[in-house]
Amino acid sequence: MILTAPYYHETQKESEVFSHAFQNKIPMLLKGPTGTGKSRFVEYMAHALEKKLITISCHEETSSTDLIGRFIIKGAETVWLDGPLTTAVKEGAILYLDEVAEARPDVIVAIHSLTDHRRELFIDKLGETVKAQEDFMLIASFNPGYQRGFKELKPSTRQRFIALTFDYPEAKIETEILVNETAVDSDIAKKLVAIAAKIRNLTELGLTETVSTRLLVDAAKLIHTGLPKRLSVHVAIVEPLTDDPQTIQSLKDLVGLMI
Ligand code: ADP
Image (cartoon, rainbow, N blue to C red; front, side, top):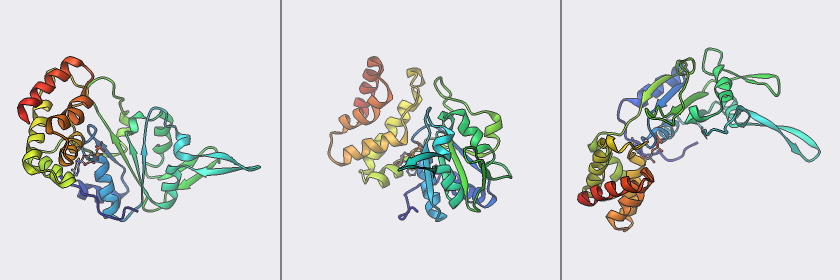
């Protein structure tokens, strides 16, 4: 259970959508680039609905066994250990599969029967089917990444979810988020947001992902604890975005003019 309310700035009636999805037992897909508040939103909703939240950060090695469970050797015995998905299904928790498209295909197969009217999980290693507890809810996030290097989700999977797009918030809201998250001076927050807007518009740089709110929060934190502003922006925003020396130099020049 999340005890203190996480700070989350609503941008598109997303909490109302989430509450209705929860009420109707419809799984939800949060689409959008990294660092746009998807995970924070799920934490915020779990707190608001007073539900336990189980998060799984999916990567290319994540398999259905990691989610469902496995037999382990304990002394002279072999015992079954529920995985996080099975625990969530049994306890009626909110299960958040972060970056679901990164996981191995058997993960998608495993969740299918949980995303339709059956709401049940088949545990093949036990030959058992577990009915989801009333409050179980499945949330997944997905980065559509219009450029190369991102995995896709099949229509047959996508259409099992209702979906919301998360994007970088408008300048006023993003400034408010920086001030709230880091207590940085609002003038500095405004400058950071302006730098982000500028870089986000520089499509010719061909960055795989551009400046996220997360990077701005990091820069604001460093500035707030006294690291020089340009250095903060350099290490928190410029360097994480690219390894190409020329692009780093262009971004450095640009930032130098703005802060
Ligand atoms: P994602 O899950 O989309 O990768 P996160 O939820 O981890 O992104 O967000 C990254 C950081 O950005 C958060 O830790 C928070 O500081 C900030 N953030 C982004 N959007 C919001 C928002 N709407 N309200 C509050 N904080 C936000």
